Length: 215
Image (cartoon, rainbow, N blue to C red; front, side, top):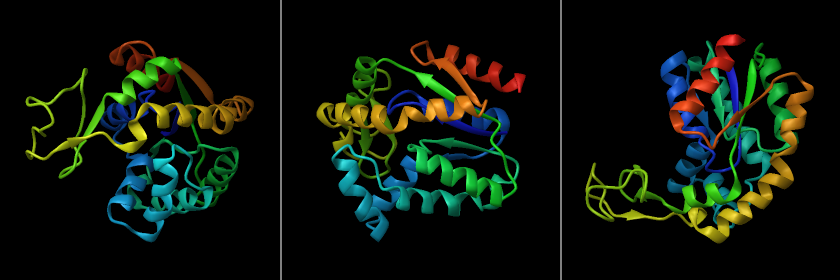
């Protein structure tokens, strides 16, 4: 199963991807996680990415495509993969198509999670992360036992710059300008499947599983 999860920041792509990993035993390819790791490690690529991420803008295609191209060649992708957060632009979609072709792979589906902007802002502004172990929390949906303290390692919890409301709304504008056209791109390719991302997590998962089982 080779799948793209499409949708704006906070739509639940990572949550659904994690559950699909268990169902299909294939890796989740999350560009967001890879980029944050590069930022944390202060690699040259990470330093370039950080400036864009802090401003709520998209990281350049050159940086993201390079990361994904290397990742797709790893052995754990031989039986399938779940792309979470990539592609985000039409040039990235074209580059992905070329990369998959070179590797002898084809996409099976593109699942688009549809969520209203105000709901996304509410989801993202409540996110917190541990400075020491990077474990994620949400102040309403998944709070720590002790406020501001990580349950796992006792580290300090903080709000990432890209989870602040002004940055989030800017990210939404960027998404609608550059990423939303991907829906039409994949609709024309006969791959697009639309899911109601406003539903409870379990219901969204069921919608996605029914789509994939039908393929």
